[in-house]
Length: 590
Image 1 (cartoon, rainbow, N blue to C red):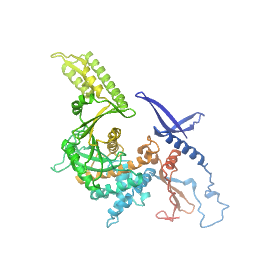
Image 2: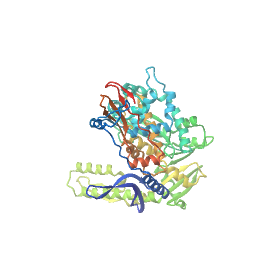
Image 3: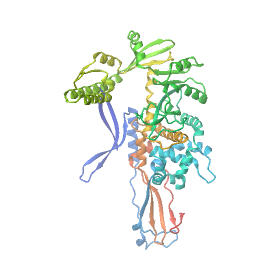
Image 4: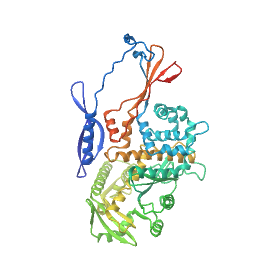
């Protein structure tokens, strides 16, 4: 194995992306390269660390030894002994292949966060012996590895996984009614989970919680609206563009590293600007008053809430984006200010107003990116308008096609003036140069407001860019962890479903924090897929005396997975001990 770099130019800047590849020789003598791991853009020290790891891994790799196995027809020279078992190797069978590697990784993350200890104290076994803490781990591991419905977990996935082997349980743990009843026992411990995870992340990664990122998202249900007036499933503004479906709103607070601090499930018709006050009080009540900086997108805080944050004792600091209307109001005053370089590629203008500091930031890379996006969309819209102008259509058909073009590129449509003939199915279009100049002035530029009047503007810009961590959390919840569709109908189980997805995301982001120092291109999903390749199966070998030797074995990891294990400082456990049956109906440990 070796490192390979790929160079790509994007927006005038050269990027180098690294991967680990290995050579494989084909039957015709040709050598091809197989992609093993994608590392992304790594720095010089990370590149050197990976090169050294590959060299050490190759030097320490041992050649396999060939062991002589003696079947039942070649044991003439063996002294008769009760400890000697003659095997019928010709009748060897491989049974019950199941996914082991991903389940083992999920269990290691669960134990690393000490969630096994936490839940063992709170979810006590039932009188019938049901281990609710293990049921919860199965639900969380399922959400992390192969998310789906509880019915699918019960019917097929649990038997296709090695969770029963890892936990030392049987299929009774995953009964469908047991899975549902476990949901009813979780919500009362939600606040304790938040406190526990904060302590663990502080110990594991030495992170601080001085900067908090706050945002909201929604998740919809493909079902009929509830009849109860107090149900949380409601119609509202859908961020998934499914206004035809009822939904709930999820408010989330995370750190810039993406570590979630708390969340809340709100009714689907909750307005964004009505949520912040309650969340500020909840965080203050749970973690006490401290010097925290809240970073939010525009539309979340109201002027009344910002005033309360400024006037509280001690003041609650905030950094929030502003709507375009406020930018228009301060544009003349900002034009008189001179640009200051906050950091290479980022310039700012500072404008103090009424106890606040307005930061007008310009990122050159962002300018190039947004300008390229605008040109591409405008060029596509212009070409479409040219096609429509050459078509022979009825007036109604022309209106529909123009409406479709406008819906497909609304931002580009604002830069074009389209005039329809009063009675004929024709139209004229031209570029609105005044709007284009205004768009060019605002591309890659943002107006931020804060009550941190003495803070370095470069830090403020850095804090605001970290809002992408919240968006990444929502992306993982809806993508990798597939929080929807939600099949539950009761509000308490809907919230429990989201709580389970939250815990699964905590495992996900913990793995991500372990991978981030190694290479930014190593995502938790790619690593989970590598681990999922390790299977467990039962090897059945009949003996000459009518018994059967059973070897439960997980497959040996591929070289790239061995390298990952080394980098993550993980060691696979020893293989389970073999078993030999006394008869067809019973088995005892050898």
